[in-house]
Amino acid sequence: MGGSVARRQEGPVSEQPFLRYVALGDSQTEGVGDGGEFTGLRGFADRFAHRLAEHHPSLSYANLAVRGRRTHQIRQEQLAPALALEPDVATVVAGVNDLLRPGFDPEQVAEQVASMWVELRDQGARVLTMTFPDLSLPAPMGPAVLDRVRALNACLRRAARREGVLWAEMEGHQVVGDQRLWCADRLHASGEGHERMAAALAQVLGLPGSDDAWTRPLPGPAPVAPAGWQAVAAEARWAAHFVGPWLVRRVRGRSSGDGRRAKRPFLMPVR
Image 1 (spheres, rainbow, N blue to C red):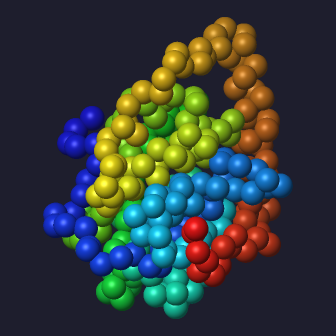
Image 2 (image 1 turned 180 degrees about the vertical axis):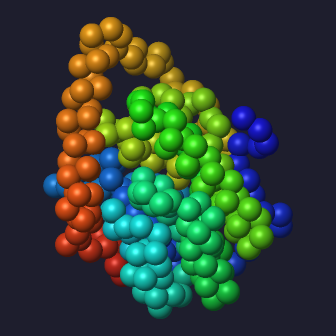
Image 3 (image 1 turned 90 degrees about the vertical axis):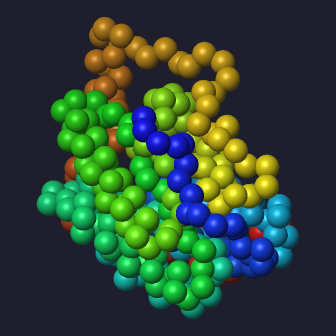
């Protein structure tokens, strides 16, 4: 892993109070993996909003993210409502649903994301984003996905430097391989994973009391991965429960977000 654990644009965090935080994105921003459909989803954006509110008690928060959305859909569906809310803090995290599709172009996806950053920034928002963890998935899809993740991250970094956007560097941390940070589908973060993402954003924004603890190993021994026939059986169950349904949706031209709306489309007090 090269460079620092989190990238931060030069200059102090605004001394003005943050009053309106708006989150744009897909399933990670919506909070899939952190909570449940009946108990409610939380996610890194909710957790980051609570961290912001600790220092800015008047903060209001909206989350426009919808699972399954590709970057161009996020721009089409979420950017105008986000601008209408006039945020002074915004997170835009997108691209995973693009890199899982044929014909993926990392430069094009990064520029679509950057176009959202620019409009929000030019309206006065402090914009934050993050790169994606280099988590290896099982063969044969693992190496191809990993190459795409790294290519997209490189493009996002260049765009963030160019546009003066803050970003949390999620690639290259050994702790990412801990299964406790991930859901059973291996694509969405667990509650602990979302908490670490929120901590990363807090660090790059420079919130008081934030540090790089989110990059350190979890306490206690990590779960032991199955071996032998147990490993084969585990991979088969994973493919049946998660890869199979995903492929069926792709063939049918469907998305996990079809018919869904943002869970928090309006600004509401965090506290």
